[in-house]
Every structure is written in C-alpha cells, then in structure tokens.
Image (cartoon, rainbow, N blue to C red; front, side, top):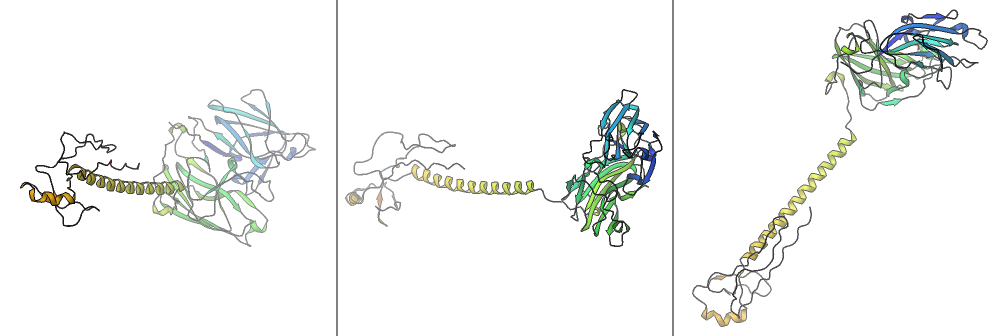
Amino acid sequence: MSSSQLLLMVDDPQLNATYGGGQWGTASFLQWYGGSIVWPQFADSSTATLTGSLFLSFEGIAIAFGGNTPSVFADSQRLTVSIDGASSYNTSYNDPTPQSYVQWYQSPILPEGTHNITLTHMAGTALDYAVITAGQNTPLAGKTVIVDNEDPSIKFTGSWTRNTDRFHSGSPPDGYPFHNSTHQSTTPGDSFIFRFSGTSLNIYGILHWANLGTVAASYTLDGAATSLTYSVTTSSSNHQNNLNDQHNFLLYSNTSLTAGDHTLVVNVTKCVTQTFIFDYLTYQPSFSTLATMPNLTLPASTNGTSHTTTSTPVGAIVGGVIGGLALLFLLIGGFLWFRKKKAQDDQEESNQITAFAVPRSEQETLVAAKPASSTQISPPESSSSTAGSSVLLQSGPPRVVHKSSRSRGGETADGSTSGGGSITTEMREAHQNVAPPAYEEL
C-alpha cells in the first residue's frame, strides 16, 4: 500500500463542468495547458452586472484550480465557494499582482469519495486546469498523473538550480510555473532520473522565445535514447511575434508505452544562450488505484546510455583528506613510539647487567692478584676510560640490578636493588640508575 501523494491533472475540456451566469468563452493559446482556457467573458469588466459560476463533481480528497486571475476592479478578487452543499464561504485569489497565471484556489482535505463543488462570483476568472488529489482508492483509469519538479521521486544530478521567479509571457498575463518552481540548468551533463508505471509520458518546461540560441537534451526511456534540440532564430515565428517565456512548453512526449514499469533519464546536452527549464511531467498510470501503486526505487547507478555526469560531493573530498591525514599521523606516531620503545628496551638491558669498573689507579695495584676466575671485557665507552685498558670484575657472578616494579602501560621502573652485601671498598659502582624517559602522548 502506497502512502505517497498522487495528483491528477484535468484539462478544462475534460472537467465536464457546468458553467453559468452567462455565456462563457473559450480562448486558445499555446502557453496554456492543452492550448485553451474558459472564462466568463461577460463578467470581465468593472461595468459587468453579472458574474460567472461553475459546478462540477470529482472523485478524490481535494481539488485545486489554475489559470488567470481576474484583473483588478470592484470586488473582482473575491471568490465564493461551496462544497457538498455546505454553507458558502468567501476566499480570495491570493494574487498580489493581478492578472497572473497561477493556481488560484485550493480546497481543504475532504473525506475520500465523490464531491461536488460550486464556485460563484467569478468576475473574469479564467480556468485552465484542475488538479485533483487522489485518495487511496480513487479510480485512476483514464486519468493523468502530474509530478512536480520538486517531487522526491525525481532525482537530480549535477549543478541544477531551483528557481521560483515569475515568467514573462509577453501578451498573456505573466505568472508562475506549476507549484511555483522549476529546476534549471545551463550545464551539459546535468541530468535527472524518474521511474513510473504507466502507458504514456509528457515532460513540460519553459522556453525563452526572446533569446536567440539553442538548448538540447537526450531522453532515455528504458535504454532507448531520443535527442531533441530546441532552437530560437530570427526566423522563428514566436520570436518574431514577441512571445517571451512559453510556459507549459512540451519538451518530450511518448504516448505509446507498454503498460508496466519504466525508467526515464533526461540528460542536458547543449545550452547556448538558452536555459533548460524543467517544470513538471505527466503520465497515464497503469495501476488502478494509489493503494496498488508500485513502490519503484531508483537504481544505484544509470547505464552508459544516459551519459550522466556526477559531481563528487565536497563532504566526501574533505572526509577523504581528513582520513588520509589521520592515517599519516597514526603511522608517524607508531614509528616514534616503536623507536622510543626500542631505545628504552636497550637501556633496560644495559641496566640489568652492569659491570662494576675498578678505577684505573687501583687496577695497577690489583692486577697481579686478580683471581683465576676473573673475566675481562672491554668497558663501555666513556670519558673516564681508555681504549684497550682492562677492567677487573669481582670474583663470581656480577651483581645484578633488579627492577622492583614494571608497568606495561607507563613503562615505569625504580632503581632499587634486591639483596644485601657490598663489593670491596676499592671498587666504585660506575652505573647510576636513571628513570627511563617518559612517553609522549600520541
């Protein structure tokens, strides 16, 4: 069971609405969704004595309307609404700069099911489309799903920018894109990916007819790529007619898909004084209700046909540098610790077996009387010894300096000796116990 929100796009001819108050007119223009709008032309001025009304039924949990807000004149910015026969209430179009092309009404959330809505006091308001929020069990057969560019099911890669600026149409009213935002790119290699279950797909954006230039993209659907280029030249009729920004511009269309799951990859390939502007996409679902909508996950990576360019995140770069430095410091610290440990071990070995040297002045007196069991070794180098001189050791095993305590953690030791007794008064202990150097904290 899916918990995602699902929006259904309904163009004005498919609303099956009842229009009242007078004769409603229909206008056609390429900038409107589906190319047309309806409006109460009899109420589109300050001298009008009548206002328009609209009644329709829909199945879902909410409904919104989009199109042109009325121009400013007495009481023109007020709209009266009644849902399911409840008491009417007044609302406004929330348009600070009328006239504008914008979503001009949004109902509250309603219980799932069929609902009736009545709009009155429509003073020149133009209706282009309705957006119905589907419930879990709203029938979807024959319906069109609309997905905004900011929907989390669309994953962008590259240097896309989110834009909330008004577009400038030229002759029709200026306004805002669907849900008031677009994703824009001027960088070849920027891409986005989207997965859906359906039988058709349309992608819409905005094209700047006032800018001479070219924008191109590849559309890869289930591995099959289609490249499309949009060019504005001095001979383009829309450029010559001073058309500026065309919203609801159809960038790509495929209406003959097999029912099932599909993967779309859009890759920007060229931008010359033009911007690739993505607003929304629509598709006809191949599932029957939101409750049975497949939970499609995006692949870990796209195949080579998408030519997707990815940018390495700054956080990953910083993390790699910090990790490398930490490893380097660890290796250096380990080397220094090993070297100090080795030096201390050598010092401890020297401390444990130490010869007691006889002063040179006394060696001459005692040399003739040295015991047969004496052993001669070369003395350690020092400022008080002469190379090649003999050192007389006491008879029997030499006295050993014992460590009274040793701690592996801090490697501490005292210089005390175990056992009693002393050597002859003519001998002087050459070694003094020295505490080992303390380790630096690594």
